[in-house]
Image (tube, rainbow, N blue to C red; front, side):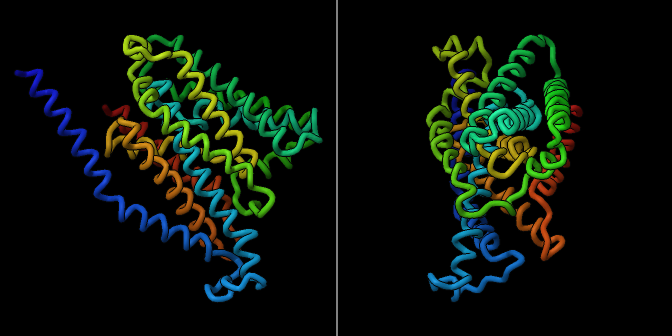
Length: 337
């Protein structure tokens, strides 16, 4: 009787969570649409709606060559980084992990620097491949280190990741200093959407198949979060699924870093807030996570463009500031528990 009651209660919670997600869909998409319109028409150059409908006008050129590419880059970067955080949190089984606190972003930066100095003619695609390999390798090392720690509290795992990322960042900065590109590295690796124009952002569309694969593997990633023994007992190929997850993370991180630079904490803040409200069923929550990542970056970008108008604050500072505050709040909340 007790088992039956628990199952019924669990089923009711799942149904309630699903209804809760479906109940706010209209408001959610209305907010995203409003932020998209704000992103298109907020900027140093004033755009009016009527001139943008004339294909030969300057307004049309500004819209298609700058504002639309920027909007698409913001949305896809936010979606990709939020999903990356979700995958890493399931793999490591810790809610305070994302590419910025697991060494992935710093590994990608090191890969780009090595590509720039050793093979300067490879272009953006080649740099992305270097970043992908280094991000994937650094993530594998981090996961291997975490798995060797038998008794770890909630805050120890991200602290180790931050220390590991700091080591990789120091190596990257020393390498840049040795090759006399330290100053330029600090400029183009800071997350900034102002450099996004037509012809310079198209690699970001590779995030779309990654998003599709993440949703396809949603159930497996959910099982992955139950731990290796439970996942194996349920018939899941644990090592293969972890490898696929880390590869998807590496692809997304390398694309975002090569396109707009490093953006921290998006993959930490959004999945945590979604999980607190809707639970851990990724099949249901992944669309909300994707929406949250896009919405957060759009809001931070608009704020950054308005703070010191007509100049703008790079997205790496605004998103990092907001994410850092929420990260500390979540750490303190976890420590209190």
